[in-house]
Length: 356
Image (cartoon, rainbow, N blue to C red; front, side, top):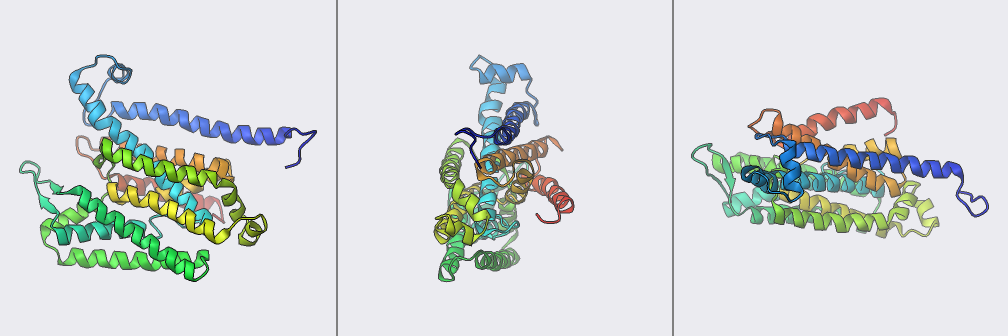
């Protein structure tokens, strides 16, 4: 960028303003849709009651409980988890320079599912509970979550270790992720084959991604991890921009490429591990959202990181709202909806653009 008399050119100002307006517009739509999501569900809540409750007025007791104990935690979890998975996806795609990199394709999601299955199998954490609905209840969910988190981070550690001994090249990291993804999937299938019906139901139930599993304490943990890692990646936005141009260019600009690649992967892995371990496997958010936002704001990480976070929050919130209302009062797993929404969008992007 060339400065004219020490001032930014008009074209550059327009460039900044356009991208800023796109992100602001998405934020306004996210806020409006969040309000709509509070109103709809198995029990519809009138908008005046929602506004009265949110603004601290004395609303109807039943509606207050629905809003504060069910709807708001679920909506906020969808927003934070969607933003986190999308940011993890854009970080992985940037540091690995691979458009197909995401928490799901690198095996972190399957590793978490395998860890949860190990917890259910060896610690006996699954049982059939409700006599009315014959629903599956996972006992000691925090222990299952811990197992899932440890296996997901172990997978990330193995990928990073292999990359470190092979100079952290993106190709090595992608291939290691694909191999470990296959191993985790095979281990998961083996466990499902040998367990009894009760534990099998528990494992399958856990695999279905569902943002309603998180309450206020879980939301606080997820939000803290996502915020810290997001701020780190935003702080390193110029390094990520340099790496988009290639390793040699980034090195010539003073970027420590192997270190940035490792730290970027650690941040992305930590985000995806904590989300998947609490909520289950949710695919396509981390893969699709970065590509959507690149079409609107380009590859400048000053805007791409924020825009992708908002896009991920929107996509997961819309998916969760559809899952809650499509066959109400029954609720579909949100991972089913994200796949149905994400796959066609990704195919459309592939058709529209020869090079993703």
